[in-house]
Length: 224
Image (cartoon, rainbow, N blue to C red; front, top):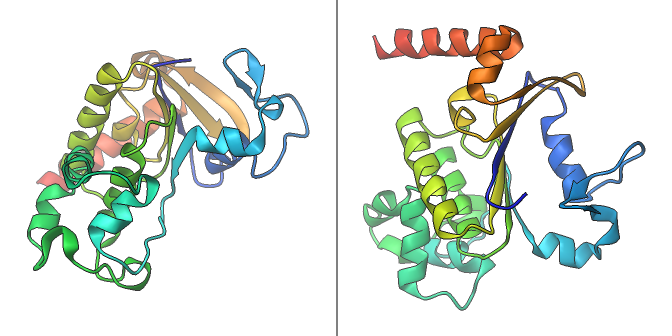
């Protein structure tokens, strides 16, 4: 569905990333089918399907090039202003300005000069530089702090208003990253055990509600 934010959560090994790989057709379904709109994704040519999707993995790959070049990988014709805007949306712009050479700072092989959270945000900026109608974030906020996570999610919400044709799917074990989604799927051992909005899932008082209470308590203890 256009202009929707979906989320998938659940314990480790629940099958969250596997759902995204089914969407990307990295392997094919053996039962049922995956629909995009009213059509099975199997009906789309593979190249066309993947060109319509931007996927940001938990451990993104960066090339030994400048930060600007890594962001522009998805859109080599992008201007420096466009690159900087994407970086601002991904909450990495201020970090980049603190580097000795700014956007021209060499990243190093596989991004060794950047922290895990910085690499994730560079990869998110890269994804946001394209017009792909579907954005997949596969635990791509796991290495950023909650304040930065909130900024990025707010920017994604603003971007959805500006680009109503774009939808996103967020996979995360951190429930603060999925709470604002239009629809949340909860998986366990490859099965769908709960679904709904954040408030609906809290009312169910199941796995999601229990995990939300635990994570909120953990956040409060860390803040103290």
